[in-house]
Amino acid sequence: MFHCSAMEEKLHSDYLHGRPFGGTSVLCKSSLACTSSLVIANNPRCCVVKLSFRHCNDMVVVSVYMPCVTGSLEQDMEYENVVGCLQAIVDCNRGCNFVFGGDFNISKHHEKTSAHSIRTNFCYRNNIV
Image (cartoon, rainbow, N blue to C red; front, side, top):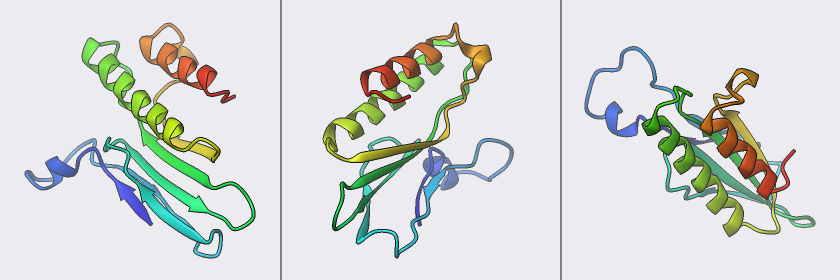
């Protein structure tokens, strides 16, 4: 099991109460791949694991917890920062297969937000349906 939390610093400095004290994790069944290793994401909102196989392309599994869409400039910058991290992961692992999961905090009600545009552009650039 690999785990990351955007609240790691807060966890060590205060009492745990209310939201948000979650995080992201990736569980890997040991018989699934030859090796599994944590990929440094440089962002606590992303947990990234690379699965290596003998006879096919490696797979990068990304669990992401995006900030809530509030429409604020601060939130837009955070959302863009996390997507930039995702792009760096893709760029550094060309030739791998990817699985992106987690909570993108986007729904059809957010189509006119910057976060929706940022996510859509990321998917378009990387041929993600």
